[in-house]
Amino acid sequence: MSENQLFTLKLLGLSAEEKQRFDAILSLAEMGLKQSWQIIEQDNANFFILSYRLKNKLANKIPIERCIFYTSQTIEDSVNILPVDSHNTPRLRALIELFNQLAKQPSPLPTETTTPQPPTTNQAIADKCFNPQQGLLSYLLKTTKEIQRFSLHNQENLYVHLENKYYYSASPLDKLTAYFNSPTEMQCKILSENQFTAETHSLSAQPLNNLIYYTTLNIAQGLPPKQYTANMIVRLKRWPNLKLSDCQEFIRIATFMQSNSTNLATVAEKTATPLSFVYNFYNACQLIGFIEYNQEEETVFKETNSETKSLLSQISQRLNELSNEK
Image 1 (cartoon, rainbow, N blue to C red):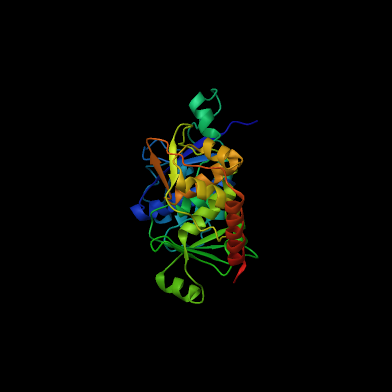
Image 2 (tube, rainbow, N blue to C red):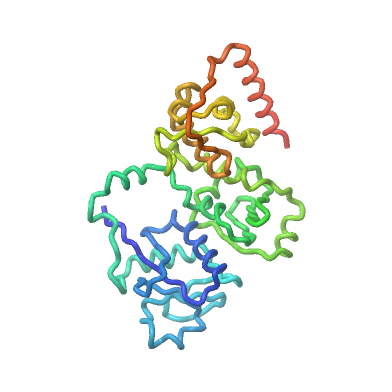
């Protein structure tokens, strides 16, 4: 197995908001990148991201092979070119292709390798935990104010308005799963308010929390939470939207976690649910702020009698019917 290398980038001449957008696109690109890339502030970065307009001004200050020039115009040049839109936001597929190409070439500076030493116990544990900073989910958790349109071939567009905390699409969530792992062919474009209004006037606004929750359920893979310890006492503050497709199976967990403050292993035991299943539910609810943490365990769980089981079954059936009503 080849060593995973870390390449570093320094952004030059970008505003704070443009840097946030670049970081968001870099997070989206992680699934398609062959090596690791990280933005730093130090001058010893492997590569520098700067406008093509500055090429001649900085010719004697930064080696040309360490420069990645961004531009919204079509440029015929032998230097490293990164296409961007009118907001200086990199085009996802172009970034992935360029960075993977650069990673194959001899590095202009020594790169760090992530495999020369065995991982520490803490690092090994972290590597086996769910990391929300990946793909589309990492973008949804950003605090930028932009409006983004995501596009995939043979898929309805997905519009995300981070400031208003809504998403828009002609497809229900269960038909948008192709976006969740941020495939390399996914296209991203920042829209103005006028463009956004024109393209979404016939679409209904949907809570961004639903998209974050559902995306997490689909990518968490039953992994334990990154910053959760076995003795951590948690409680569900409120139910997530269990009318969403395939979410009715979480009713029993939601009912128990809202009535009890305990650890996740106990939740799994008392609800007769696989722990990996509980992890998925916890991860999704934690990211939308529906989890609270307590100092002491408070368990009022009683064995579910036949009447309660029947009620939960009816609730589940009704939620399933609602999720299918369009």
